[in-house]
Length: 253
Image (tube, rainbow, N blue to C red; front, side, top):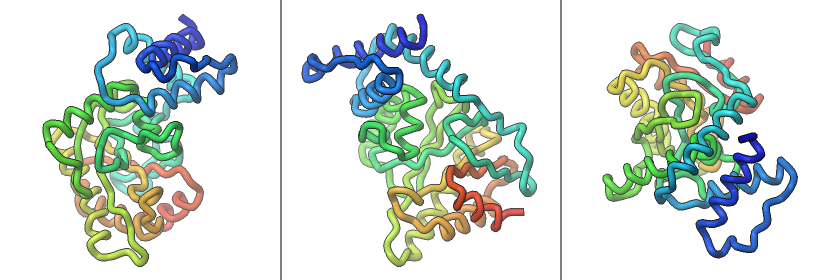
C-alpha cells in the first residue's frame, strides 16, 4: 500500500466506528487528509481495535517518521558531562525514553490537532499508547497526581519508552509548592528511568505551555534537578523555541 492508501484506509476505519461520522467525506488533498486522520485519532476513546488497523497504522506512522527524519541522540555533542541540548521535534528523537508533559487523565490530549506535546506524542505513537495509558489509570483507580511518573512503551516513536509526568499548573506569582512539584517531575522521571534500566532520557519543557510556568524559572529548576539526580543517566533537554534554547544555553556548560 502507498502512504495515501494507508491513510485513506485508516480514515475509513475510524469513520466506520462512529455513526455520527457516516456523512463525513474524505478530502482529496494530502494535507487535509492528514489533518482529518490526526483529528480522528485524537478524539478516539481508548478502546480496542483490530489487528488489521494496527498493522496499517504502524506502517503508516513509521513511514511518516522516516520522511520527517530521525535524530539519534547518541550523535549529539554534550554541552556538559552527561547532558545534551537539542532543539527539535521530540517525536523524531531516537533515545531510550522521551518525557511527555501529560494531563491528569494521562490518556492524551483529546482536542483535534492541538499543538501541545501530549497531542503530538500520542498522535505519532499510535492508538496503542492511549490504550496503555488507560490501563495504567484503570489499575491506579484515580487521576495521576502532579510530580509523579509513569512508563509505557513508545510504540511507533523512534524512542523505546515514554515517561509520562504531570507538571504543576503555575500561579501568578509561582508558589514554592509549584516549584517543588516541577522539580518532583524531573526527579520522578529520573528515578523511574534508573529503576527500569533506561540510560538516556529526553525532557521537554514541562509545564511551560498550557500550564503557564515561566520558561526561565522552569529551566532553572530543570537544570538544577537533573544535575543533582541524573546519576549515570544521560539527559537531553529538548526545546522547540528559540527563546528556550537561549535560556538553556545560558544555564548549561
